[in-house]
Image (cartoon, rainbow, N blue to C red; front, top):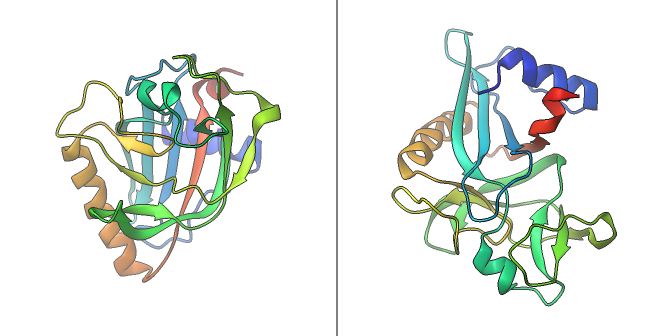
Length: 197
């Protein structure tokens, strides 16, 4: 687990925003992709950083995947190939909505950049020449009760492994909406190697 100081340092170095106006629940949502990310494993981290009602900093870390599962690598939804989110900062990326019309989640609100992996094997290919930008339904949601493998749970979405973690995060998100009604959710995706450069 990364510290608040480590994360803030990386964001500052990359000139990405860090939200803090002294108000509670001004959320910073940050994904950290594991070095040499393994397809089909929930081996990444999703951080939620904010001040609580007393002004004290809180940092929550949840097990997630920032990559598609092997099923979608082998059977891409898009003829251009499976989508893999490009690392970077995405302002107002998500808003409140329903994932596939089924349950409350964070749904895409602004364009996102994706690598297109089209060779239909089980490796994650992140070739800059394949990057596209647009609205692709890249949401933030949960997998099963406690999923061991990504499988069909992600085709490019940022997906929590455990529903209990998701429920914890949703309580924080509801408080965010209380303090910032109708606010969108910005997201920054980093790579673990950023912390060792």
